[in-house]
Image (cartoon, rainbow, N blue to C red; front, side, top):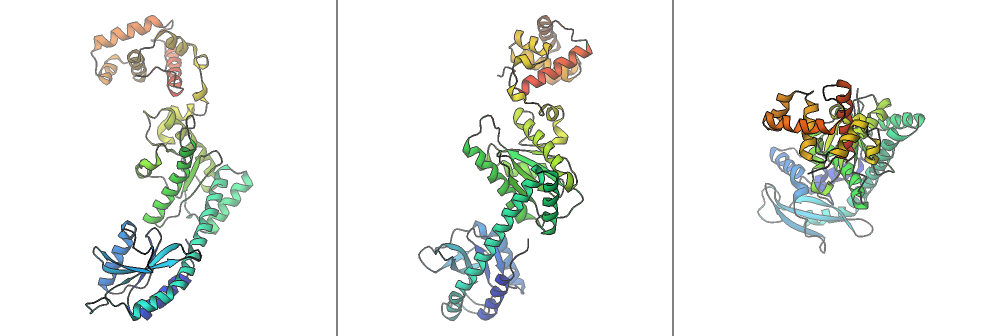
Length: 393
């Protein structure tokens, strides 16, 4: 992301004036700018600043303009607060409290010069933050248009995302749909969708040089667009945070940017499959892995009743309400009618399987050896499970 250069220049000028290496962190503790660190010791210190600064306790500057803090692997550091026009803390200037070769804290000339520079630094930091917020908001709007707008709008959004370097140029792109099960979603749940989008964007921004865009549609469904295939385990770890529960995600197929809306359509189907059958799919479900469930998710199966099922499934569920029998039939149909494999998969004796199959045959008017009947029953039973019509344990 392009940044306003004035802040970096001002920080380097101040570093030369003070005669020491300095850094600047935002309100969250993340390093946003730093002066040139030349010596091995300076670079070691900078490494710890970059990797640990956002995990440090907040400096004690709520009622004082600066504070001294002892930091592991860094030493004693002077934190000087930066205030916006409303007197809110928006960041801190960090400089070593002890200059090389000194044994006591120098709280005279260097501190005075640093305090004099805080107003300018705060103004420049505020300007950078406003510019970043503006770019983020624009990227969010363009990402939403990219997957939900009319053809001309999608084309324009793609052009602006690449031209303004809001999204990396790549040979293939992948869309992700995020959200909660809409059947029981609360206002708080829907807010978590936006949080999940923001958390993922932040993770990518802090751990790689790639640019990913995302936003939230009016129907509370989130979208992310990656300039590469999505690493499902990594996204799963992000969404597994308790603060983001019950957000789930679907991952679309790899496509060109001009066809990313189709990738998003498949991502939505994978997402629907993940909450229609949460026991069968992970918190992040890929279109290429959800199989038949992704196709069935095109239908409003959550609104189905028994009357919407094929006759064979309707007949079965009207006569059988035993979870054991229904699980047995599903396992039997999954193996294509292989009794030995079914018994092994269910960890039951084959005689127990035959006993259950006899009870099932008695409840069905069709023949389980008939391929057409078995296909209809298998698919109908899967639809019933997605619709929540199969008795649970």
